[in-house]
Length: 146
Image 1 (cartoon, rainbow, N blue to C red):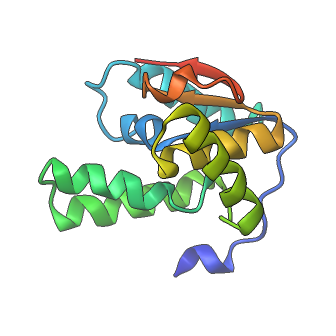
Image 2: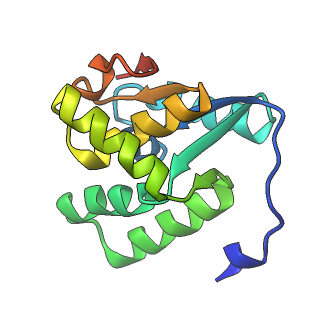
């Protein structure tokens, strides 16, 4: 895979965690909030913000493609696009999982959603999401788009 040979991305931009609902908007301009999502990506490319996501985010984006019956070719292009976006990808380690478990339990969220919140909280970063339920968190700063 080409992403393995890339040097580690370093950014001076303010950290912003994006979830899969935001990342999917990069592929569907008709989605409400797609303009905001694309602007975040442009800011990331200019190092104004540092876009971060936990390691499972690409899987969630592809799951949206599957649910919308997108083609395998579309999914392969999406993976290439995500690699080219050069997001900062955080591994899902025990510390992040424990924080996510606590958030999921306290706020009655799905664990996979709570991981995004836990990452934002750990980095004192803003979470950008289009998920209204996730946006009700009290664990980190949130910007709801769409």
